[in-house]
Image (cartoon, rainbow, N blue to C red; front, side):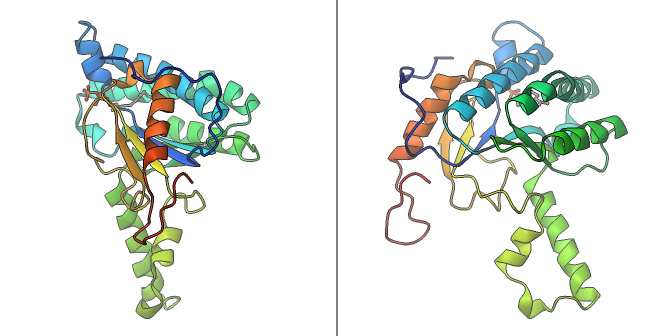
Length: 252
Ligand code: FPP
């Protein structure tokens, strides 16, 4: 795939960097197929792209980055690929957590922890606990995540509160729902990037992306780099954000 067209900027960070960038890291399999390599190699190179992107996001002054690393629907892939993706998460946390911590990154995890191998559940808790007081970039890892499932979990909890009398139906508001999502304290994404040329959200952050700018780039995820991130941010900065009103708000 062609590299991003926009040349590397010599003068980051951006003045109006989006506060929160969410990324659908797509195209690992096609990247590998184009090179006659197994899909797993695409995912491994995808982890390298992730490292580059985290570093670049920190340097560009982005405060939150959410990555779609395993969807609730990815369980339908062949068992060996699911196993590889689980193995990559294990290795990512074991190999990279100390460095992320040193760089001041705070790790958060969204998605359904039930159904994950217990050791993965423990690693996710370890990553969150170790980094919880860090003040740098917040890395939100969406793992076993699906937005409809997340909203359904919130709906069940609201139903429980109504059933036990702690909430009345009239009191239910958008804030009630938002507060019961997986990471209610994280601001909504300003920018959602999807790589690989596909143009859909695929059950990613459906509630939170109501007013996000969507940028679709042709680059396969393993080729994604700082220049591609900067190009996506430039496109975001050219958009007018009106949030349903009339006054344009560009940037965050
Ligand atoms: C989509 O590419 C990507 C995924 C399903 C997984 C994303 C995972 C990584 C980038 C590496 C793992 C990172 C962590 C932290 C676990 P695809 O396989 O759907 O590509 P295709 O559409 O070309 O087949």
